[in-house]
Image 1: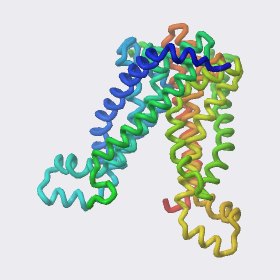
Image 2: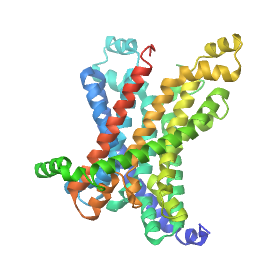
Image 3: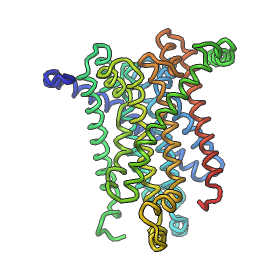
Image 4: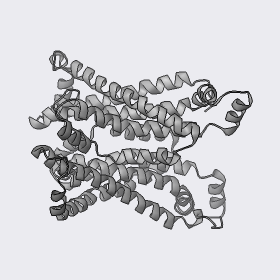
Length: 215
Length: 220
């Protein structure tokens, strides 16, 4: 018998607490990633020579094993949630940066020129024309980054902020598969739920994309 | 900080560190072995699935959503689970690495096949090709660049994640990260991380080079 169902019913409170703890690490990581990626993407989009450099750096950071990255941050931020969030933020950058740049690329030059010609300033054009039009591609990136981050949080259990990932360590040390399986399923469900929420957010933010809406 | 970097440089360049059964060269070889074998097995499973879905158009929903599912799968959890169920062997490591690699390959193979223009397939049929002939001689060659991108993505992901072999007491470059953690030896952890990242970047560049040579006559 691999699963002891009794364990699940007696530990629902713990599972809920771990899930909330999981979100407390994952959500700030993605938001922080977005906060960094958006301005960087504008720079990468406007200044061609910097584009390859920025995308290249984020690609290389992505290949650093996540556990090592957390350990690397330990001397700077210590055994805190900040370490977990900062490490995860680094991994979101590769997806968020690439998608935002691609999203900005997908805005037709004519639309931008029309906006500028109508007297909307450069910043106004960026905020009111380019970002909204790039939103579908940016949101696709946010969805990928969120799902990835939710799955990666478990690695941070080595520094004590793994959320649901604590169940893996716990099961491993006690040779008890039930919490491990529960953790895997819970992570998948959480990722699925986060993805659904983001689809809804995108739907609410882009009324012009809906069927039947006038372009 | 500068102190750490000079220690790291010394660690990476000392000849003693590279030689022997626990040296960097041996660990590097193990890491490459785990990664290649996992990607190969994943490709053997994922390519036929992606080609089938792309050719028949059946199960497209699965192909599109599989990548999301794969990304959400926590590798540490899978390794731990398979380890607890099947016992100490390389099986947990291979299962989780293969599971990690499959979605990227299936999704990209499907995307490549879906991007083949209907006109090209119609022309193949019009020339009297059977479905299988059209698949081999028209669709796969046209989808090849995206299929290879999928394999490349999967390979890099697998290399970065193969450190988990050390988590269940096997070798590879992850050994330095886990041993360093246990011994509170930051230089060793850092050295392992740098080596894994360097290996992933190097393999990515090699595959990108092969990609460029193979498809140099393509327009896009």
